[in-house]
Image (cartoon, rainbow, N blue to C red; front, side, top):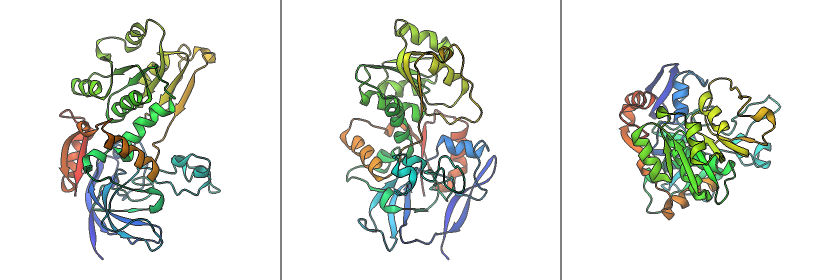
Length: 357
């Protein structure tokens, strides 16, 4: 049986390069030959044992590639076609999908409640840090890459761009809003870009790494607050003349940024939470105004499916957003352990890495 190289989760602290058989293709599946993928912060949570997955699972959920083989029932695609698939791969026919919550596909079944059901790659099935990946429900998830776009131009679409934009969308930003985005990692940077696209007139980014501060300005931030030089809550209040922001986006997943995101809101404002939290959260009494502040707290899991991917690639093709500056390092799949070491320890100004088999 033909084999392929894969990055597998062995145990907390160890993701290693190994081999597995190339998977068989079911009637509704597609086998994708990976041409470019990347490492996500969620993969680092898996590496550290902060998010549980099965040992021996192939990691990764951000595929760009070429259709190698189509299932017998798949229509509308051809072998050799360049495509992407979202990190979230909804079936399109589950109760969650039919309620409009595609990301939660599979949650709340007769077998019990399972959140994050739509996230399958590198979570419940083998993922994309490999030479090949099996895409389930291909007709709901494969999105052809427009001619003229490179792999790196669309590499952020499956997760980082979709998640970051969803932070702005869930915040229901309106034209003229003032928005604060806490943390300018890849997702925060895309949230900044999404806030600009949604019509925010003032965007305040919170970050301390000089390279990320510069990219934040390029992505649309009007002000960048360095939290190491003072209290970011006080600085944001100063920048807004004491009014507070209409929407805050939390893009790090830490207690202190969650609290700060709440404290900078105007009465009636919205906190859009994108961070992946590894422990219980506490809601501060003052920031929550004792429950009387008319605040909204929204959480979002990366929207997926082929229509979402098509829309994101159209934004890239239009030139309104350029995510190429987010790719700062490049590795071969054979160097995946080295890539994880760099990315997990955030050395050398890394934002995102491109992995090519």
